[in-house]
Image (cartoon, rainbow, N blue to C red; front, side, top):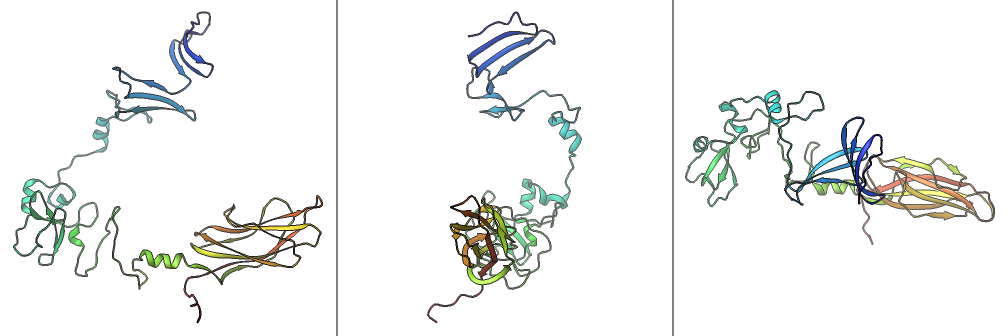
Length: 342
């Protein structure tokens, strides 16, 4: 239903109203002379009786958005921008930020070739290229030291990168030698992989995945790598950080620590391993007045904070006991493993 607001000093209009939370208002401001459409939810604007393709207006976090839903929408007949936040037209962009330049022969590697240029790069050398090629096959010819790609459309081998390095600084395939020469520039691999590598032996060799995993993963063990032995205490009930070590490596590790509590009936001390302020280990508890050793095996990455948190509790009184923690140690092994039975 709707109603007219004829007695309002500022607004006149009507409202499509489902309830207090769901409505669509159409108003005219009589004092400032502007119209207003106000919706309790997203507003869709469609034409030509098309329910699937429309403009949708929505405000999220106090920011209004306009989105084309269905087919991709266009905003046409814009004026060229004047202010910094004006929308840019295609004509303005091409006129002010692009310059058309005729490429010379030395730049041909950076664009598509014409049919004449392709003909000039087709080589029919019987017996030089492998037989039975398919579209996209690559072949490096050691006689003329050039790379070729087989074109299914042309039914011929086409030389790639005949004029050398293009103006964009990337290597042409001609420069990637198969006879052991040194590459003289960067090679952009995109999303492709380099496969079949041997494991590295020198500092600047590429590392294989299995080589890296063997170093990084390692295994938790009792081989002590780093110690933080200072004794710390805590006498409060909520879990509180009491020890911390920053790791500079990524691997599987064993965290070792010792804990005890003060001598008091019902006194219990709790400790737990945290990483970056988040609990990752099992809760350990003790009422012993002498130190008890604990370990927790976890996986960390470089930059993580390996922490021991503690809390205290005394069941039969409102007073808390004191928890003591010492000997936080990091242990792991990547090099040696004893063979069982020997």
